[in-house]
Every structure is written in C-alpha cells, then in structure tokens.
Length: 255
Image (cartoon, rainbow, N blue to C red):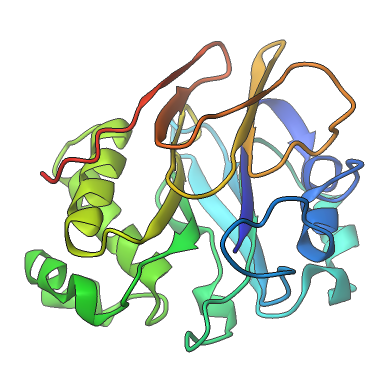
C-alpha cells in the first residue's frame, strides 16, 4: 500500500526530509521494506504538502502532487530544495486496483491548515460504506478530489473537524464508522494542522521519532540506523506535537 510521513519542528527543506534520507520517502517509493497485505512499490503518484506561514496567523497548507512515480519527476529535486517548512506531510501512492491513477487521487488532501493522508484501503469500496455518504452534504460529494476511498475518508474527517471535534476524535470516529461497515479495511490515517499530528494504525506499519523540538511520524523509519525510532503498535492512536507525543489503544467502536 502507500507510504506517508508527517513532520513538525524547526523549518527543514522538503528535499532534506523527503528525498535525501537513507531510506527516504523517495527510496520507499521503489524499495519499501514492509508493505503488509498487498502491493510491491509505490509508483502511482505522490504528493508533498507543507504549511506556508503560521497556523495561528493566516498560515495555509500548500502542496505539490503528480500522478507519476516520484523518481520520474525531474522537477521535484529543484522544487523541494527551494521550499522549507516547519510542518510537512508527504505520501507516495500504490493505487488499489480499480481506482484511478491521477494526480488528484494523491495525498495529501488539504484545506486551510489541514493536511490528510491514507495508507490503506476500504474493503468493498464503494458500496460497503455508501451509507456514510448520507451524512455528507451534496457539495462535499460533488467536490471530492477523486472518486477514491482516501478522498472520501478526507471528506468524513473534514466534516468532523468542521463540527468542532478534535483531530483525535475525528480520526477515531471515522475509523469506527468505516470498520462497522467494512471490518476488513486497513486504515492508517494521518492528519496534521501544523501544530499537531494525529495518526491511526490499523493494518499497516508506522514509526515515530521525537527529536529536539521536533517529531516525525512515518510509515517506515527513513534512517533506520539512527536511534530514537519507536515502532507504533497496530490498533493505536498517535497524538504528537513537536514537544511530546502519546500512543493509546485505538477505539474501534462506531460513533
């Protein structure tokens, strides 16, 4: 399946985080170590999102997405070496068979300061979770980035956020609602607003490293020989800021 990461901390170049690490997201796109339950490489597009400005003072998420393998984009190294941010969320995609391979299907999905990604799949998509569409407005469904499970999940998460729920509650409720209808789904969700990172593990690998004033959450450790990486257990909810993090059991009950 897909690989993704999120970072909070002192500003770093996109290239330093995503391209230049020993087992960077670029390296994971063609040589992942632990795909689990399907897929071999992540060649169906990619996206890099970053926060431009301060999240509390007019900051907004920006992104660069392509529907091609990350390693084929000749423009990416120069672009990534010219942009720095203190909040980054990036992903490479391994499309589920039958879903479109297009730029708009690639994470991150963004709105305001929010950036979102899925590593996983909704089993039986789309019919299995069709009842959940009843809770979304027509405009939400008509403006999905793509007709994919990841874009639909983002619409569900975004609705909870717009109703004032915390990131942890939004992810937990969406996971619970989906699993109630499609229990064989795999749902590693990743969400950032530039101040915090929220993530779930349900069926796929996730690692975390807290540094000096920074935190990184990643599908795979991108410098495996370096100390400090902690593997997040399956069925967990992660909440992290640049200063601290918590890992708790994931409540799978439906809202």
